[in-house]
Length: 216
Image (tube, rainbow, N blue to C red; front, side, top):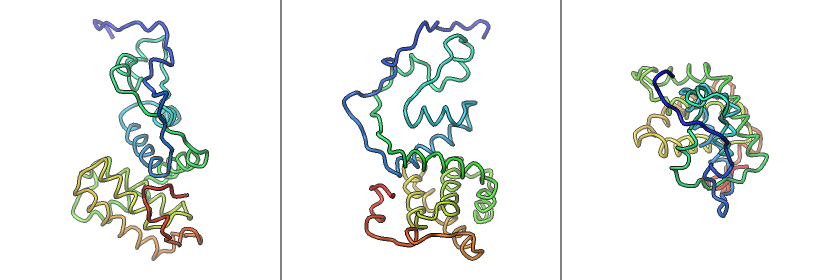
C-alpha cells in the first residue's frame, strides 16, 4: 500500500510460532466444536480458505506468502511479529476420528446453511434474523447440522454442547435464546421425520452425560 512501510520478512522459522514444546492437550469433541465455531466465524472476516483456516485453528499452522508483502498484509491471520507477542499455545493432540468429525461438521454446516437459517428465523419469534449475533447463528447452525446428519450423537448432547459454546463465546442470555430455538427446531424436524438417530444416538448413558469427556 502506497505510503505505508511494511517490514520485510526474509524467512519464516517454525520457532517464530509460539507453540509449547513441553505441554499438550488431548483433543475431544467439545474442543472440535469450539474449533469449528472459530473457523466458521473467522471465514466471515477474511478471504482465507476453509482448508487454511482448518490448519491454522486446529494445528496452529500459519501460511504466509513471503514473496508478496501485500498478500501478507491482506491475507495473513496474524503477522509474524504479532505472533511473537502472544503467549505460547498449547498444542492439541487430535485423533483421526476427531479431525474427521470436525471436517464433516464444517461441511454439513456450510452446505445446509440456508436450511438452518430458515429454521432459526422461523423460531426466533419477534427477533429479526439480521439482528441475531453472528456467533449465536453459527452455534445454532452447527447444532442443527448435528441434528440432521450425525445419527450417533443424541439430540440432548447436541443441545447441551451448543449451550456450552454459547456460555463460552457469547452472552449469558444467549444460552436461553439458543436453547429455545434449538428445542423448537428439534421438535419440528422430529415431527417431519427429518431426524434419524441410530441406537447409539438414542442412548443417553452416563458417559455421554459427562459433557467434558469425549463423545465418541
